[in-house]
Length: 145
Image (cartoon, rainbow, N blue to C red; front, side):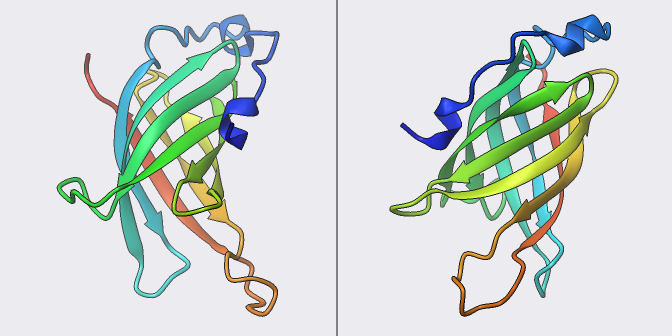
């Protein structure tokens, strides 16, 4: 079982307590891009994800590729927490033997159809690299049902 599947749901539905109805609006298919701003040249990745947000938890499955039309993709899993409109989640990209995680901190817009924020990943090269990893900005939009 991957780390994404071991995340436990919170017992308090914080979003509902704050008057934000997260179901069914935020359940669905989301698409968007992740711009890697710490690399030269800046690289962009497309994501299409099936995401559900229930009782303060976020879970989903995704495919990531260089762009929306590219057939080369990698599978990913998402898991995290939702507090009101603030969202924090980790994406585990399945690139080989060991999933490579990156973390996202974002905000859900008032209509609950766009997530915008930043993402960071640790250095994957090992101790000899001495870098602090990388990251960038991202935006996901929920597709109409």
